[in-house]
Length: 337
Image (cartoon, rainbow, N blue to C red; front, side):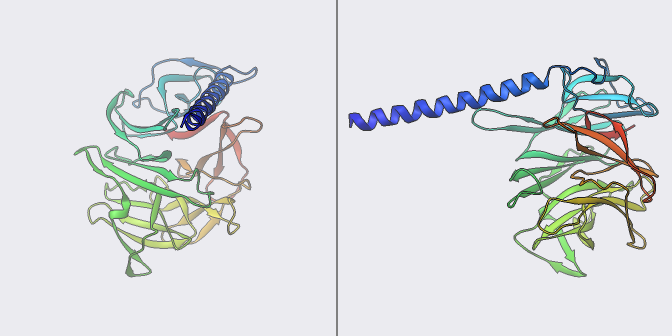
């Protein structure tokens, strides 16, 4: 009995030591990331609101004390000095005076994830617990509806095993749809039921009813058009992930898997009237939900060279011409105002 107690005590001490090591390692990485780098963008604390015009908001990914803070630059001069709010997010989006901030706070025993519904002053109106790691966030053009997607297992869409959960919130009634999996599915013109259905990457139309999203089932992905009032989704096209609806509502930018079984995607634009797709000029693999800056240009995040966990924002013409250009270094989750 004494020997068993000694072994148990040793195991407990070992686990405690490992946990302490993990926490210290994470703290050291965070400390390095919070140190400004020579030649990095100028970032200063300031007041941000969603009422500001001709601004581009994003999550600041540049190393320094304002890393992961919501920041802002002039739309016409995106490489100018950025102003950072006191709000930190893993994912962020905003439209029409409504914002959503997805936060992820690692802990020793478990990770705490939550969604913050924000007003025009970036003040928190409501807080919602999240079932997993933040992945995607969107706000409807009117600001009435907010959507978010989280991973409830696995770490990314490239994982061998992953599951997502996508929720939609009506900010007028505060009615939350915890999972789009409760919606009826029409696939290839027929009602469809399966235990492996997953949704992610919602994007809203301007009518406060229509939305588009990715449906995953039987190892295939589909673009679906949904109706919030009817609680239905209908498949439109295959091999479409993380759609983003253009401001004029006629096209969807999305990532398309170009190598089966591999985490390699290219950006395309789909004409919703003809279902004709156009490959964009970006040749790097884009694992992001693109954002339309206007009816001619889309923006997206790519990993930053040599910086672990960081990203840069790039933009490219939506008609397949031109070349990609660096929009905002050290940034992610763009939201044009």
